[in-house]
Image 1 (cartoon, helix red, strand yellow):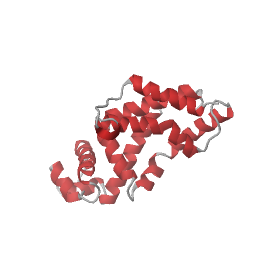
Image 2 (cartoon, helix red, strand yellow; image 1 turned 180 degrees about the vertical axis):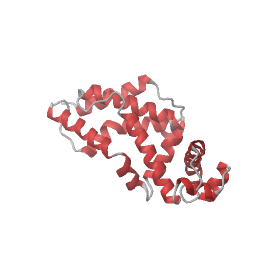
Image 3 (tube, one colour; image 1 turned 45 degrees about the vertical axis):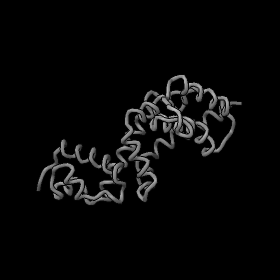
Image 4 (cartoon, helix red, strand yellow; image 1 turned 45 degrees about the horizontal axis):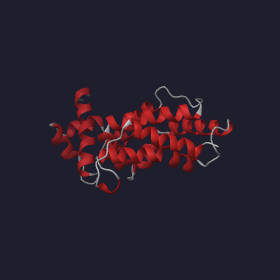
Length: 197
């Protein structure tokens, strides 16, 4: 039986992400991946049972990495504005530094693998964020809202600004756009205003 090579395993993960972004899930095959990595198809099966196993494991690993990154220096017991500011900081930093992983995550999350990957990697994050939401409501730091409304108002503006930044173009695609700290703070102030009593 052949042994696992950590360098090859990391190369496989990196190339999987690149190829899913470039070709989509349907255009991604184990044969193409092996060729791209310069290894045999048999080598891939040392690490993964099949294409589905590979996609689920890499998606779950990306989700877990995102989860850990978003909780850096964060506690669900933080005052609402402080905790949300930390979340915005962590999420924007992660997304700006990992555009390839975010593009792949979006594809996987909106695929047949999405539910499995989210359930495997983000359940603890969801629980922590629900503690944060309920704590803020109980302390009367924010108005009572459903989790879906909270999520849309609290994070939607940040994610939209990050999409504009990724494209390098503002609304309508006609003007250049770069997400600055000033723009992010402007949006953050409006989010706080919308959610606080």
